[in-house]
Length: 236
Ligand code: HPA
Image (cartoon, rainbow, N blue to C red; front, side):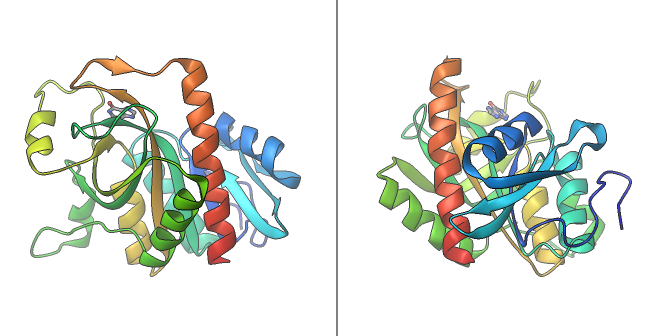
């Protein structure tokens, strides 16, 4: 059944979905890496495609920006479309000093300043965590590719422009990088008893006032896509 946000019917979407924030990146992956891609969603421009990569069925769909948007799309994929694995691929800002522009960051856990977990009414602080099976496959894929990568805690923030300027506090706690979606993805996966991982490429260093050029972003995004696709093959 289509949802208010997705035209797909059950069976249109593969059990593993790659989710970039930007739907045009989903289109790029479908057109450049998948065989026989079919577009299954155009609602709100949040494009989704299913095709094959090295013989396995894979889907790619935009998540939009921020946890409310990721929350909606990933919830529907897990709970309405029988998706088993979601691999977010996106950009992040470096937080710790040893993470540099263009490095890959794999989110083992996602701290957050969002209230997303309030809905579960837990008597404590939940720790949104990646799924080990996808995490270990992604580490192998990043090693095979020879990429510079880091694995650890990331921060999923509700704000891009943050008045409190609190990044230095998160840095003290060893947070590697900041982005805006993964904590909601990890919580939706846990609640649905499904699997998720986030692979990021560092596009800027907010504490050092550095950012990549558009061309650098394109190249490092390609490396990350290839790691994610190889990860999808390994967990199939
Ligand atoms: N903050 C939040 N999200 C981001 C950033 C950032 O600096 N860079 C890329 N995604």
